[in-house]
Image (cartoon, helix red, strand yellow):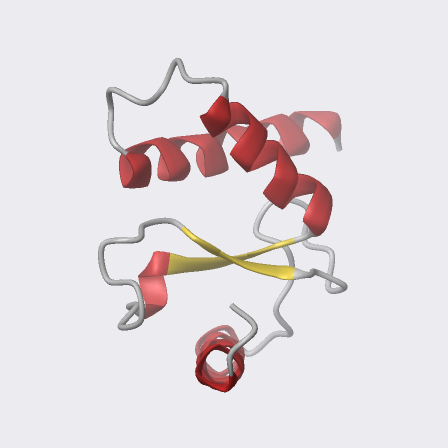
Length: 98
């Protein structure tokens, strides 16, 4: 994740996302434009990620996603399905709070 190739991939992802939405990229959960991490929803295409394989997350929401996954009760579903479900649940929880 610290490689030049990843920095280029991240910059390309951001540029594409901003082009498609017409807005600055923000955390997919809370919308914070001061997001830190480009999170993989799947590792199936590591190094050749599709745009939809990645999502911007602020550090607290990124860590929360991994804590929820690491809790173990989800693992029989598969990583991508779990991550997409956790992302949806986090968004719904955040919307209820606001």
